[in-house]
Image 1 (cartoon, rainbow, N blue to C red):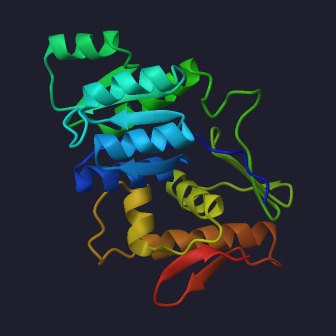
Image 2 (image 1 turned 90 degrees about the vertical axis):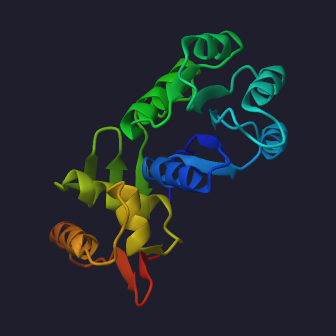
Length: 234
């Protein structure tokens, strides 16, 4: 499978629920993620791997967000840093921006706004999904996806998917060896808690299969892993 390497975003957040939510959210939009639950853990990862961006909480154990920001700027000025904090006073925001933060969002934040801010700082740093000439392209078997345009062709034929159908297929294509539970898919694509009673995922998977089959009926793309969930058939 040919695939453009997605930017890696480090989530430096000690709240388990927020860290997990951001991991699912960013993963559903095609980013690679790494979680850190303390400032020292985040610093260790940055020293070894240099992510494209960091979503940074200020109240971290081990090393505060302010201290970590200073170390990030010493290590690599090219790493984008978006501070996500409950502190909403102007003085704190100005101080962090002057100290090297690229942007600042106040908790509780709107997820779409956070995504837009991350995309914007990555573009400014030259690490956005569109850099290097042309849109990102995902290729799996005879499926070609252009996530920035929600475009897809199968065996050269255009296939019309709804936004949620597209996001589900994109999630599977980006991780062809991984089995996703209905819970994984629902929370990644709908950005809501999965209650276990909703048949929406099954219906959307069925619709995707039917549309792909109309373009190439001789190929099976999505495999059901009984008792677990779904994955791309290798």
